[in-house]
Length: 440
Image (spheres, rainbow, N blue to C red):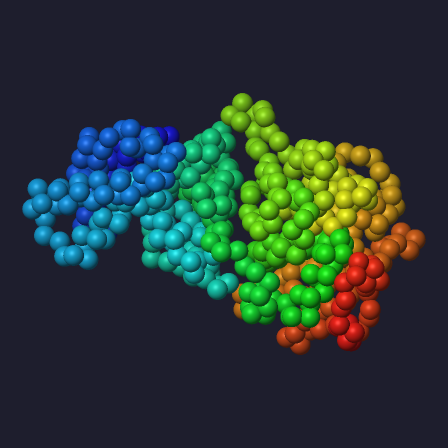
């Protein structure tokens, strides 16, 4: 949908709101009549070429903001409305947010302290700050207003959302992930969940300062990445898996070719030789989908030194394990699980999802020989995100994959278990020296 069409729709919304706001039981927006007049002027006066160019050229934003500001000020003078400076600025910000930004939630998207935004219908907007949920005072007018914002997000990406396709995954221009689901599936009204994308990716120093891991553990996992161990980051939703994966990827030497594969591009690696691949959903006709599994297979033909998969959740697990077992050491990925043992069970299930009729023992042998290390991440009750386990996959005995904890979070700290891992020999073989007392 073009920006011009969005302006026209916004004008219709303002007119509908003006008609319904007469009810004595509704909270009346003091700016509603003025907004309607302003949107009418914007539709008639702003050059359609400027609106169209805005979708491709963000440098036009300032020019459009200046034009909107002029129209707002002129309408205020023509209507002879007395507004304080604060009210005028509030009105201008609301109009700009509707025209250029994402309406009522635009301020939340720009707020660096907000990590997640949850719109539960038009009258309830929650945010996550410092790991804790809180209800905001922000509301939408109605379901149509929420739908208008969802369409502004998905339309530039060539995606659609309607009754025939009531769910959509998308991302904002800054990379933030967006999930939207609408009626009849969402009974409370259009529901939007936005996971913010950090402007400056967190570094290992940040994670140490936050208490996610210790200096000693950071030194160990950096050595594991440099020694080309295959590592899986496991954890629940929102536990910080992707952030940790980004930090792990930063330890990859700069002279290696890295291929990243994601559903929604979030990883931001600082190395020079990085090829980023992103899956593609089916088009309106239900064709043209490119899955993570397709990309994993293709990446093997791209001469990668490292393959970094944002998350495995299906049949691509089989291709990933085969890649790890056929010379692509040092691969990294994440998966949803509540413990390292659960992560292995999930990998078994995902391999079976590939449609291959493999015996369980064969699958477990593949996993045991491919995976070297599982890092378990968790979000604690206070909202903090911690590494709670670092577990080595030591092999297989009979039908059971043997695991050994190297570091465990207990009594408020991540501590060594006192057992020297087998991978220490591989790390030393790469010429990487670790402190003698690291595992004591």
